[in-house]
Length: 365
Image 1 (cartoon, rainbow, N blue to C red):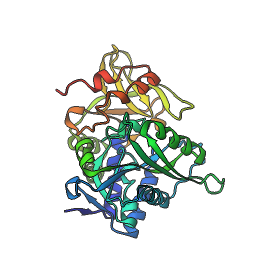
Image 2: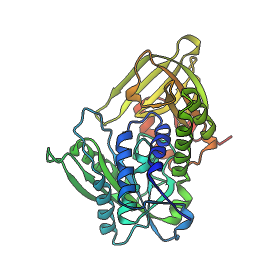
Image 3: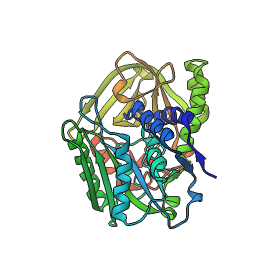
Image 4: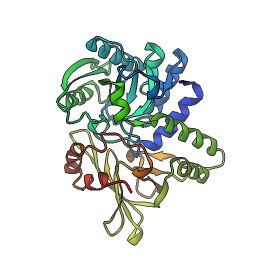
């Protein structure tokens, strides 16, 4: 049976989602806004994929963009709902449920408000357990597909006349950049509903259980908080099955914002033979030790935690801060078809100048 999501689930989703954000931005307050709006206006329902029929339509609820605090973004909860309505109109059929492309500070809650208002189920499946820099990485195997897809985008800064509604059809690879351009024009961040697919396809290709994993992690964090930072870090390790790969002081941060709306660069933690280097493209994508040997690579979960056990995004990191690096190996998390798709890696490797695919796609131990 499904689980009605209630007020106490909001903070759990935000806190668990923040660990799986893997250094990505997103906004915890935006997540809270979406969650509280949903539980106050209706009864959003989380269901497993098994509760839907094979031919039921499921789409992905996403937020697109890399909203720096410097951009004039504005996204209201209703924008997520309107994006779903526009997709249903273009599809000519009802959506039974929504998945999300990735967990994150707010993305874990992207499907809640449409569920409360329109009755679409929050399907317990994700395009990727953790956050990632490109939409293709959460597209559950659709990245290279020639199949015509529908994607919608809604939102924007109303006061600056940047509000946009967009419905676009075509191959995913060709229409995803159109939505990224719309996000930029709208002020940097836009709500989207994209890629309607049958439940049978989602069952085979998504990372199942991704939302309940974030909720369970968030519940463990909340329970540990009263005992202090080290208890929180222990709870995160125990619940995820991960471990602290390294800890130390940030000695160097070399991350730049590119015109393609990505934060790219490196962060060095520690010094001498204990130093490790985090490779960043919006999120943490890899970790090398002092000798340049790779010790962690996407799609493993890689997250920086403060001494209080708070997940820190790349933007929050500054020289001199003491951080713990959490590593959850890919062998112990559900992996979607999109993180096992070789075609999603070349653009990321080119932008970052490091190898990822070789490590990401090597056989599971």
